[in-house]
Image 1 (cartoon, rainbow, N blue to C red):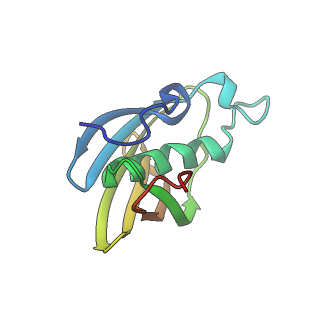
Image 2: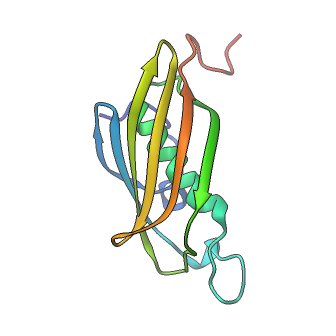
Image 3: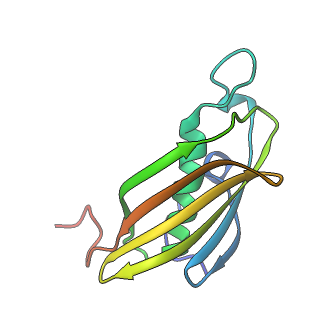
Length: 127
């Protein structure tokens, strides 16, 4: 059951295909609206958004937010590619979670990152 980010645009951030304790997988079909240029190179923000969404689903708490991220873009992504983000919580200390994410195009890793997720007691917009 998905407990977070219920209003996210899945067309832009991906479709969850697996959500389990401390793990999530999300797929994204890359479309023309994600292109950064006439050659079909995809803007990295969409790949980051996919990875971030997978990381939040791996924690899967209603209040989870991103605190920090260290990422590497390894290979270009083109319009028409199908991506899969695989996220795993590798460490949990209190309200802080370290989540490792790999984004793959078939068997080739195109992106990897370490995401620090925070789970505050209340939603970040509540006072």
